Length: 189
Image (tube, rainbow, N blue to C red; front, top):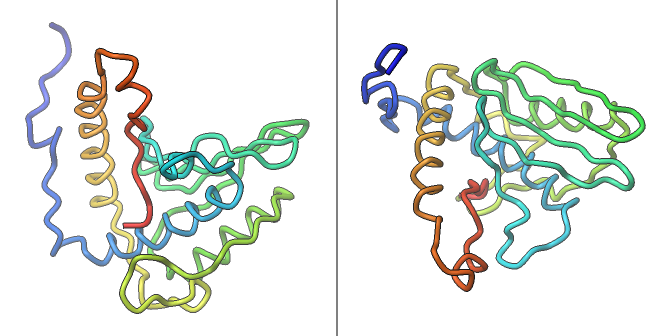
């Protein structure tokens, strides 16, 4: 076996909620905003299986989202700490902005502006779901924390969880395989 060994702590880093609850709350709202774009654009699939985020080597992705004759994808890069939008079609483009401490209102405005700059006009219901006392995204200045250390720890835990789920969902029968959605992460709770 080559390479250096990584301790179990690095595979499953500590993520005490009390230490990162502000970043958690902000990321929850940011992922709702991006998730609602996917919800608006992707054709409905039973049990809402069209809307989860998927783990990537750098963070989370929506996977391809249809938009007319084009497709786009939104990625939360928790390694480089950027929100990235890729488009494909006749005009393949990539645009991004840093993930940093900023209010939900600022994130919402910046993200929607970025989509418009890519000629992606998407209207979403601008209210978070499944939270107590929801605040309109464009008015939410309460949630404004982003700690890249804890965002990275979250991503590393999701990567390991994805590995576990990949093993678990290797179901031996076709009948059961049809009932399994995969290992996506929902953004609403």
